[in-house]
Image (cartoon, rainbow, N blue to C red; front, top):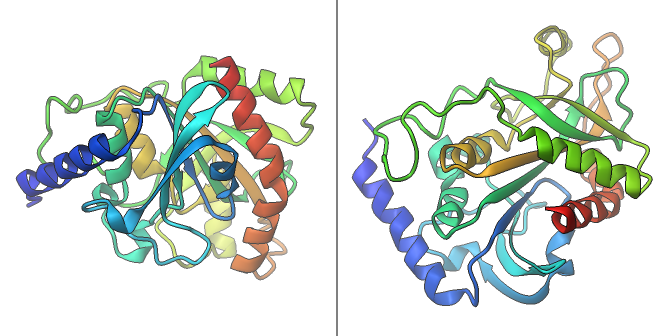
Length: 277
C-alpha cells in the first residue's frame, strides 16, 4: 500500500522550499527529454537550482539529463524548465517520476509542455520529425495516480477524453507553419517501460495498436499535469525510424545526436507557442 501521507509531506516540503527560493512562481512548465536540454539557456533572469538541492526531487542516472530546475522569463512569460528527467526504468515509481510536475502544479503552473525523443513507428515519419501528440497509450505498467487520492490535488478519476488540449495542438501547428518547419506531424505516443528497446515483433504490435511514436518517458508527468488541471501539450522528436522488417541496431548515441540536431527547431517552436499562449 502506498504511504500517501509520507508522499504528500515530501511534495509539500519541496513546494515550501521552492516558494522561498524562486523569484517568481511559474505559469508554464517545460519538461525536456533526451538530448533536448538547451531551452534552459534561452531564459532571461535565470534561477538555476540543481535537483539534488530540492527536497525529495528524484535524481537522474542518465548522462544526457542534466538534472536542474531552471526558472526564468521567455517571451514575457514566467517559465520553469525541468532540464532532464528521471524514468521508471531507473528504478523509480511513476509517482516518484512525476513529483517535480506535481510540485510545480501546486506552485501555480497552468500549462505543461512535455517533450521527449522517440522512436518512429509511423513509416511516414522521417527522423527529425516533431510530432505533436493528439493521444497516447500507457503501456508503462504503472500510473502516478495509483493509491489514495488527494482531493485537493485533483479528482479520483480524471477525464482523458481530450488529454492534449485541441487548441494547443492547433497553436503548435500554426506556430510551425509561421516558422516554416516542414517536418511536422500529429499522432499517438506510446510509453513502454524500457530500458530494453523494441523487438521487431513488439514494433509491429505497437504499430497495430495505433501508435505513431514510442518512448520510455513523459506519461507520468502528463498524467499528473492533467490530474492537477493543467493544459498539456506533448511534443515528441522522432529520433529514428523503426522498420520491423529491416530493424537496425538502435544506439542511445544516435538518438541523442538526432535529438540535438532537431533541438534548435524545437526551441524556436516552443518559444513561438509560448508567445501565442
